[in-house]
Length: 360
Image (cartoon, rainbow, N blue to C red; front, side, top):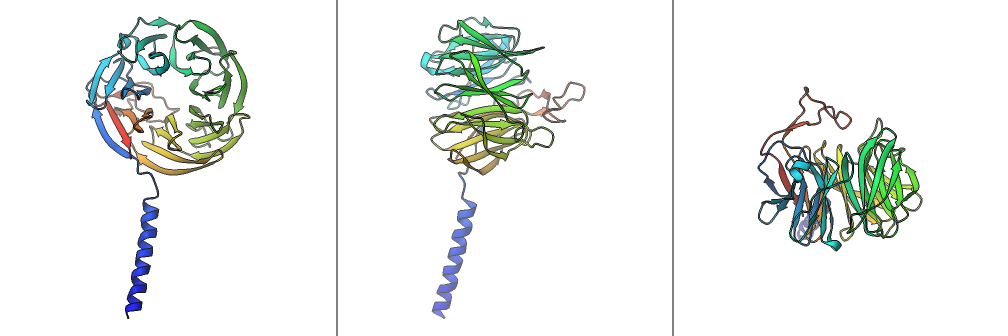
């Protein structure tokens, strides 16, 4: 009888351990805090983080480039006159103590990361979406507005901000980009399902990778320079679902792809955690992938966020991810970006813009 009870007890314990390991076989990412930022009903775009000072920069368009302090739980400053220029977000360049606000009116606003004091805006063109920094060439690479025959990529030397050259690409919808930290820069061309490989020192495109077989509407890019892998998050097109696609940076070969949530606009790769994150505003979730090797990946977990949380950035010291969203509505009397979703919000309610912090 005692042996029988011991056998039952051992079996129950083994089952419990198996269940617990299957239930908890993930990182456990979750929302730690949500802070409402008082304000108007403005749209928004990119988020960036100064990890040295734990400042979160919010591209809040008509409300400017806002600096959010997560410790204080409030916006501590609006950079310069970026509310007038309509900031889409900022690129941060700590090695020069410089931040750059990318403004919808075609200007950039330089400012000091240490003091948050801005210099006068610099006119670059008629329209500007975003910019990226290439640490190899020490150049700022700007995505200008589309023209009839494509898009101009403008390169500015840092820290002088003097123009170093322009590259014309056929895409009329260039999006996210990242550097491998060694020689090349990878830029997503959303409208033609391609990724440009750019030598920004030489000022030329060295390769164009067609990824349309697995990726529709490539939007965001993060590069794992150590493994020479390019991570691209894609919104999907026709029968091709929203997906994460991994490219061999040397030859453009697709080595992995998997489905992600809808409405993606940003991707993060954390080399120390060996994790890839995709923020998906239509599905209102955040996918977490584990990196097991250059060609080996697996979806680890997916956590719920909020509708519209499509952009995010990580504090690389605390490994906290910050994303933003606001309560919105698809007003049928106004144009709706139906390529993203037939019900994509185009109007937002005042005092609902929220900064969310995710950790584990």
